[in-house]
Image: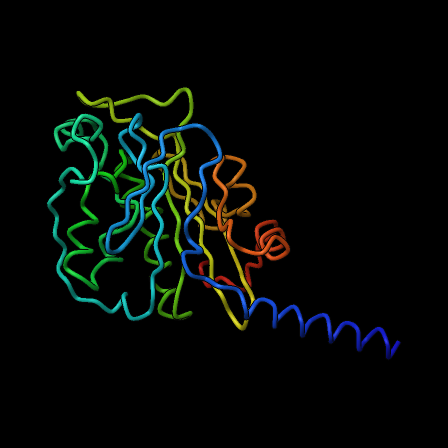
Length: 253
C-alpha cells in the first residue's frame, strides 16, 4: 500500500512538472483538417484563418490577459474590408444591409480595448460573420463577458472561435457571404501547472438556455468543425484535456 501511495505521489508530481514545462507560445493556433480555403492573417490583437469562398473566417484566435481586459480604448464601430484580403474575395458592408443579420464579431471589440490598432482591426470584415441579432446580443455576448471575467481571474485565457458551415448554409449580399449554421468557441487555461479546456457550440438562431447546455469537450467541437485545436500540446496532455471538461475549473456557470 505504501509503495502504491508513493507511486501515485510521484506520478502526480511528474505530471505537474511535465505540464509546467509546456510552451504555450501560439498555443491558440489550430489546424484546419480539410481542404477548405485557409488564408492565415495576423493582426495585432488576433490571428484569423480567412476563407476566400465563404467570405468569413474559418476561425479567429487570440490570447486575452488580465491586463488587456482593463483597457479603456473607446469602441471604433467602423466596419471595413480587411486590407490583407483581396477585394474580389472579401465581404463588404453592403452585403449585410437589410439582411436581418448582425455583423457579429468573432474576436469581440470589447476584448481589444487595450490598444487602438487592435480595436480598429477588430472591425475588419475578416473577423465578422452574419449572426442572428438575438444570439449576438444575448447568450453569445454573455459568453464573451464571462471570458473577460475569466481572464481577469486567471491572468490569461486562450480563445478560438468561429463559424460552423454546412451544406445547407445560405448566403447573403452581392458577394455571397455564407451564413453559418452555428458558432463555436474553445477556451484553454493553465492553472497550477495543469491545462484545462472547454468548448461551446451555439446555433445561429434566437433563444436562451443555461450556458452549461452549450458546453462540451474540445474533442466534440473538433468532430463538428474538422479543426484540430491546440495541436502543439504534447499528445498525452492534449488527449486528456480535450476529452473531458472539469466544470469546477471554469467559473462560467
